[in-house]
Figure: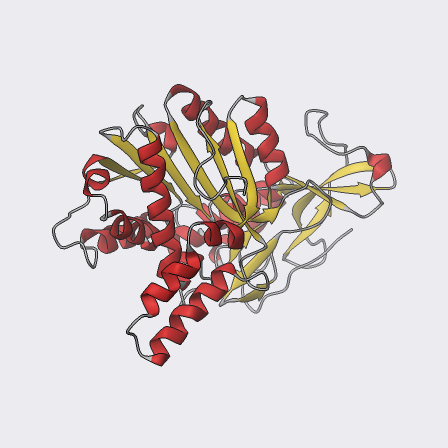
Length: 378
């Protein structure tokens, strides 16, 4: 099995990876993703402005302010159900350009005690994105009397103990994954190597079977040629959250695209300029993601004794939080063109044919807490 990516030019990181692999050995897809996305000098998130109409992809907060407003109200309600602790940690993982947090804080202004109690933490590795977040949160439209005090961290473990409300929107999908292919002699890992006749990256298979510690499906139940994906990084992130929620009261709301049931299939994808891009072409110049396996993450939550709610579709979640009512309130008194734009944005983030079905909402909470808003059984 050997699939080669083509590109009109080689990125600086591509040249480095080719030299590294030629001098040593093929690398895992997880190692490739880690470099492609977060290399200190040439990684995608560290060197590019990826999000928005002028970037390579967009997210729900960028599409409609209603998304962040509803999440803000969800956080306020969750804070009240925690007993309205003062202070508490308001944490966002992978905050992008800061749009979601700005909308959250603007909506939460309806409850000034919430804003005054919140210690805001953004977990972000990219210096470039940190700069954008700082600019956006320095002065939030509609909050002239509130100046948020924001702290930045490389990891959630850097944040002090205390009651916590955590939000992660499109964070897990960009964490590195590994892929394994069912061959006629068993499982083999899919690696990134260098084409023997061309000076370019390609996929190839490991010569030896994977370690027994990797949770592979029974090979006899999988057809030859099928791909199984596993993300140690995603599972580590969930275990970090569950550990925190066991020592301090709180909840973590995770919204991402993925599947509810574990399965087989290749979901690795790259995007550049809002279009599909060859995964191995010009690493560092395109976003690389995969679908989140919510089934696997739910099992980790249950195994650790954490309260698990969902996953449910993003569309259902937003509908339960009052999406339709908020749309009509925003449209009231607006011009027809503005109202159409508001409704169009809401449609994109909630409709089954758009982001509403493939994106899921998933919540982890400290043991003993009741189902949060949006996850109540009707």
